[in-house]
Length: 111
Image (cartoon, one colour):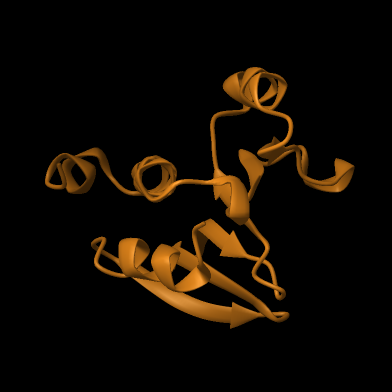
């Protein structure tokens, strides 16, 4: 089971990342763009994900992933149940979400 502290350990070392508490949600962002958010009760994580691929992700593992509320569907965003994620899977989701919001040259510097 992944915790908010596990997510923090992956996100904070990524270049240009800042952590903020906004409306009781822990959010990791680059500039003004949020790429990962953790719910106030720390049970789920929202993360940046390509819109064109998210329906397939949710359909493949509906117990683990879900779409955001209807008003947030305009964003590149998916939710994941933290208790269903493994450490390596969470790491991949966080890093790929970060790659979506940084310049390509910055993303290329992180393996």
